[in-house]
Image (cartoon, rainbow, N blue to C red; front, side, top):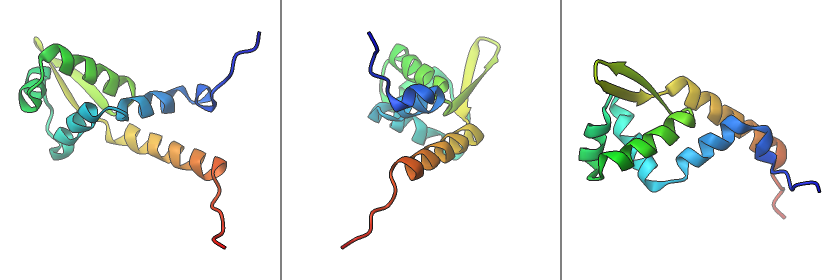
Length: 107
């Protein structure tokens, strides 16, 4: 039996990127990184008033989606925005939307 294939199955990185941006909490987390400063799970949890385990789960999804990178410093893991990968994925998304969804002329 043939399964129904989503167009995003051919773009796993883009699928993960879109999943990462689909949550309001993850969007709020991303806006914390606008200043370019790295943050720990604890700092993010404190700033958003969520528990660290929830922050960690969201950070993992954001990292898998290419929006964040992480670096360990001793016992702490510092997260920061992944500008280059985010721009690359946005470019891919723009290309896909341009190809699949051409503009229609207004009547």
